[in-house]
Image (cartoon, rainbow, N blue to C red):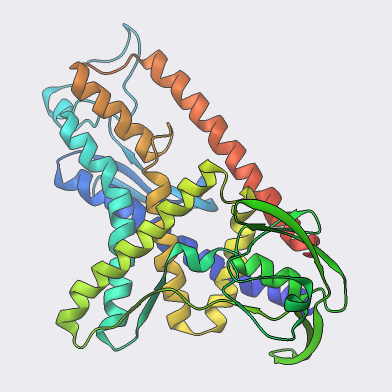
Amino acid sequence: MESVIHFLYNLFYFLIVLSVLIFFHELGHFLAARRLGVKVLKFSLGFGPRVIGRTVGETEYLISALPLGGYVKLFGEEPEKGEDAPALSPEDRARSFSHAPVWKRILIVAAGPVFNMLLAYLIFTGSLSIGVPMYVPDFDSLMPVIETVIEKSPAEAAGFKPGDRIVSIDDRKISTWAQMTETIYTSAGKSLTIVVERDHQNMTLTVTPAPKTVDTEEGQKTVGQIGIGKSPHGAQIVAANPLEALVKGFQATWQWTYLTVEGLVRLVQGKLSMDNIGGPILIGQMSGQAASQGFGGLLFLIAILSITLGVMNILPIPVLDGGHLLFFVIEAVLGRPLSIRKREIAQQIGLALLLLLMALAFYNDIIRLFVKPG
């Protein structure tokens, strides 16, 4: 029964977080289209069959059955094909997305990711304006690189040294400091084979984490420790007043965006494991954990995920906003759009890549649920 309640708790906050992210993203597309004179047919939170909805003016506002996304449907978004396509009146052409100048289409599509960044900025600025500091780590602080080794600790006895980078533990690739500590914490009294990188060479060390009793929310718990440490790196951002918060909020948004982009680059370069990719189950768990820290924790998570969503959507992958922007840039350079056939092929490839990424994220979620580290 307790596990069911925990699941429903995570699900509730997952839906709240996802709804806020989707609403702001689609709101960007919606407002830009309205402002630039393009007719908006539908604004939906969710995909699939309609659950509830209402038409106001010329737009139908919907909540749909599958809450894993959303969309804004624009008039003329998919141009009619063939000779039998009905001719549009001058009034309809003026309000059709596909007949709008390319610069208008670029602004409408880009507005979604821009609004994700705006949401993060508003949350950071609002928090700073009431005196809540923002900590933005640098990427090195997330990496499994040892900075200190405690004297007479299991790590010192095993031969660990400051500067060692943890590569793997018991043949499991380690990419982050948190991943490493979680594995060590759950391995008290168990011998671990750890590969470290030192002076550009790998070497294998064996260490047994010493058991230590600590207090947790569930009561006392025995965890493993080997006696290594890491100092926090990054920026502690504070604002003396609401006016300064306007500037510092931008600083926090920029630094978290940079951190997100750097993480994606490291994934592509193979410096970060694909194990770090997560899907809806991980987001649900994170939402529940953030909510347990209070309203501020939940807002902070929304800000970070909003930046991630904005960055991911701007990638030049067909079916994402960035893919559409790529098509429009090509159209602006060539003076004509790509053929419908070429766009369809590119979108099919983009959809396949996206489905593979979603499958990997879901697989990682399942592994995290049922396979314990170490």
